[in-house]
Length: 66
Image 1 (cartoon, rainbow, N blue to C red):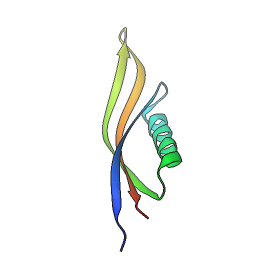
Image 2: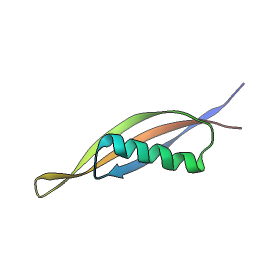
Image 3: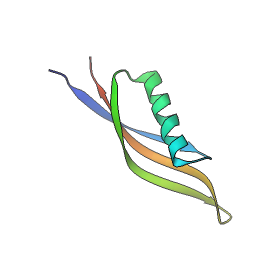
Image 4: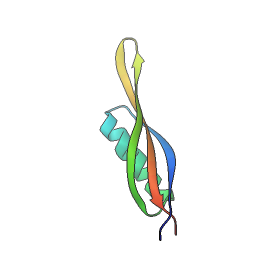
């Protein structure tokens, strides 16, 4: 039997939502072992002077406990 846990990760990028997701998963993998998946909880645009200046994602990362 395995037991999994989820944790919320927030990541940002000035390029795209995809880049923010990639950065978030890569950073989570440095600390968490056995990551099995993630789902995007929320996305947010950062607007500066009427233009998009950033992308933020909040994701739930699932990992199996040892």
